[in-house]
Structure formats: C-alpha cells, structure tokens
Image (tube, rainbow, N blue to C red; front, side):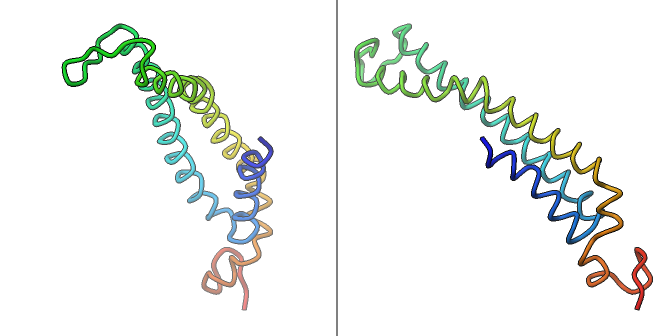
Length: 134
C-alpha cells in the first residue's frame, strides 16, 4: 500500500520540480482520465464476476444441452472469480478516486513552490518566458 501512495505523491513532485507548474497542469488531467477509466473498469469487472457466479447458481448456464449448476468445475471457477471480483468491485475502484484526489490536492498545495523552483523549465523554454534569463 505504500508504493501506490508514494507513486501518487512522488510523480507530481518530480514533474513539478523538473518541468514546472505548467507540466503539473498537463499531468493532472491525464491522471484523472486514467484513474476514472481504471475505476470504472474495476467496478464493472468485479460486478461481472459476481454476477457470473449468481448466474451459474441459478441454474441458467447451459453448455451443450447440459445445465451447469453448483458442484461443477464451472461453478468452482465462478467462485474464484467472485473471490477476486468482490474486492475489485468494492475497494479497488473507489480507492482510485482517493488517489486521484490526493494527487490533485498535493499538486495544488505545492503549485506555487513548483512555479518558483522548476529546474528544467528555463532549459526547455525560450529565454524571456516564465522568468527565464539568458
């Protein structure tokens, strides 16, 4: 759990320190869009695995004319899928919301600092912009 939290805090810090506040403005929409896509995908995949088990337990799965229900290899596989799907649906998807918010708030708090201390901004920007001198 430490690694995702460090990734969320270190990424905007390094981008802000190296490239400046303008780069943070580009980083945040990318993080938001990818985080929302991952959260929706996690919630949908977890729900699908959960519903697959319920579908089999209801006796609605038919393969080659044989109804597959409980105590079949298909049901055993669906139980494993449900075991993975429940945490994916209930915790992983919503947790991504918190990570995106943390990255945005961290960047907002340090925005002024990044604007004043970027190391590479004058190297990649033309002289005379963003306070860069010759």
